[in-house]
Image 1 (cartoon, one colour):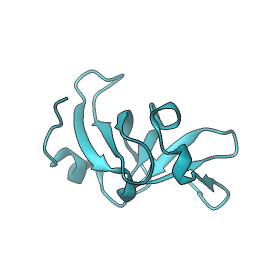
Image 2 (cartoon, helix red, strand yellow; image 1 turned 180 degrees about the horizontal axis):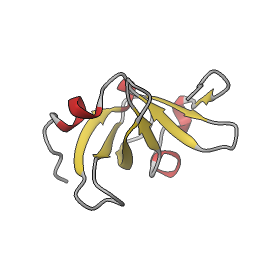
Image 3 (spheres, one colour; image 1 turned 90 degrees about the vertical axis):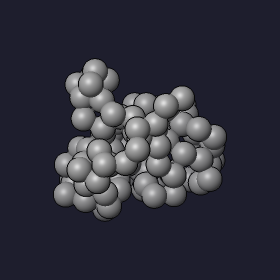
Length: 98
């Protein structure tokens, strides 16, 4: 995916209303998960990413700092995130329990 024309989200946009359901793309530019929910708002918040699974079934939730993700909006207005982690690295993280 070419992210060069995508607009990065500002700190005030890093909140549940904008990030929930956003696809997360990993180091190989393949989808590695989806944002389930957000703890806090802004650059100091954390997001819970559902890794693997299908429609939330069988997914492993992991908690990561939003600072480790690059959230942006594509040409159609769809929000997504990019990380340097692979799906295997995310799956190796501790499972998050609310």
